[in-house]
Image (cartoon, rainbow, N blue to C red; front, side, top):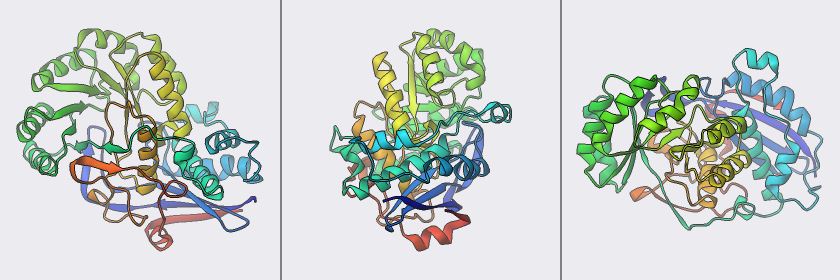
Length: 387
């Protein structure tokens, strides 16, 4: 059984309400979905979301990478010639390097993570469906139930408090609050007041602070019992991370500054127990790279969080859920927002957390989601089939 074609879909799905942080405000999802189909008509689906300020990728660069590099590398592959390897190993063997060349690096590309992720997930979905398996077969779950966090964007303190109170009433007990603007402290204070002292709160600055400002801001926010600060300095401030970690009392979660394996090695070399990894499936290039980064974190006694991309559909949410189930020692879990944020999803039923942020494991074939082709095509602003 061989691959017959690949179809790329660029989606635009309006949000129920806009979501903002210190580097971007979004009103719609801009996910890229890849469908791989064999000569016997079996299909697998994957998703990646480009973030220029994280990996340097754009929607156009993801499309170009899939069309010009990844598809030519896998198009002749026999999907049943697996050498006894599990599906993750087969996908890893088939996919080309995601590192940019010199010209791409000069243009700002850090890593082709979203492009690799979209195709890796499609390959995994396809390979496991051919085998009649769930992805959980090659990523055995170590827990039976997962608990997700709520995320509060950069609204006014009043709207943040109202949103947090609504989430708290639905049973959520963990929250991430976007900060990094002038209203950050007031927003955090309003959320803490709304959810009470027992709730877990962490903050995310999206890399907008310098060293001294980060020290001062984290000290001030510690009065509201935050348990983590995400990306205080950004990639440009990585050289100051070790000093910052020595001057604050809360763990520092690295997101934009943790994209590649070389990033992780540099962070590990800082030898600070306060540094943690944020593993986002699309950013890191798929499930295989996320597992490798988690293994590195564990080997050096560093914590990690399973993050998500704002605006992901059920495809990426499903991948994140499988990852979180396999890595049950994660500190926090984000994602599976579904139509809490999207006006429409491409899967039925959608992958979304329930009351209390709790969600069951997925055990259906492949990623465990069924894509509604009519929705996929209707939400696509661009579609191209490669053969």
